[in-house]
Length: 147
Image 1 (spheres, rainbow, N blue to C red):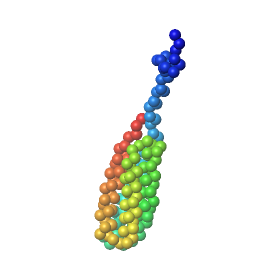
Image 2 (image 1 turned 180 degrees about the vertical axis):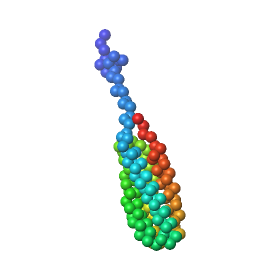
Image 3 (image 1 turned 120 degrees about the horizontal axis):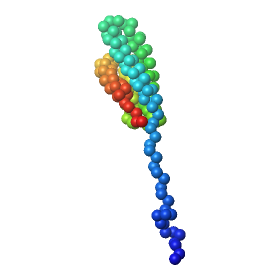
Image 4 (image 1 turned 90 degrees about the horizontal axis):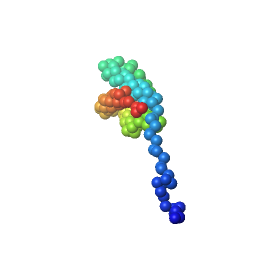
């Protein structure tokens, strides 16, 4: 009997290669994100302390508040970079990029309304930023990478 070369038998059928298990992501990006988020949190806390001192009459603290706000703008930009690194190469969740970008945009807006002296809007947004970055820092410090 002649065998049909096109018909596949179990002996000649090629098994597909096994699918490899997903590689774990790099672990160092979460360390970067933790460090930067703690730094941003400290700066936001310092902003509140400087604003409180200014409101109670220490007018010289306004310059420090302004300088720290400018530095906070730059540092929060690093927070976005840290969140991107967590996703790639860290293989972490994508949503921290959205939160970090929101923090950066809020700080940018906050600095603008601060320089415009719109205090009625500046203070509540500062309080919201305090809560947002506190929660984000807590998450970053509690997050565990897959092994």
